[in-house]
Image (tube, rainbow, N blue to C red):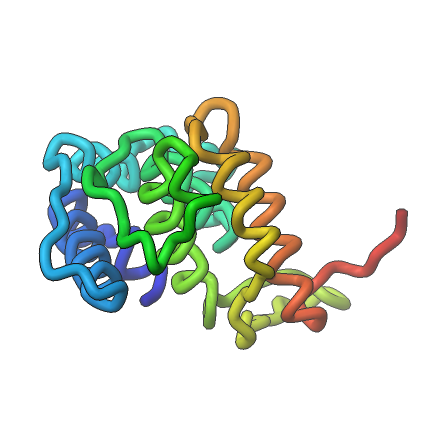
Amino acid sequence: MSFKILYNEEGGAMSNLVSIAVYVDAFAEGLGMKELRIDPRGMNAVAAALTRPDFPHADGLDKASPFKKAANFFVWFVAEKPIVDELPDDVIGADIKSISNYQNVIFAYQMAIDCLHGAKLYRKENGEEVEITLSNKIKVSRHFFGDFVEAFSAANPQQHFKVVSLLFEQLCYKVNPQAAYPEII
């Protein structure tokens, strides 16, 4: 999975829709689900959000970091709620199952994390552009994940894009310390 699959300029929203649907289907199958109901309107809205001309970064989509791309996808997916069905009890557990919209947070989080794994960062160091690969995948504790699902179960693009972007950035830096900017504060 990569951001080129999600943010596909050539295929536009339809290509994004297919990529998201294939991922969702494979993820649901991996959870042991034979069927998964989705809201087509919600799924189309998520795909369309990835091609919006007003991407929430000053320099637009092309210059946005992988963290911003992941956050944009995540907040739109959670807000649009394309996953209708609840997930199997044995996979989720009672603590997470009691959270409204948990299934959309879980699917969006997993897809965003998969996209961040292997993503590339570009920055200037000593006057030269350097490419840095996020080679280690984000892993979090069950406790963190439960709190994350609860905290972002009602996420919306206008209020949560920036904070989710910062969180994804720090989670990536935690497992890929070579990618982090020098700490000064």
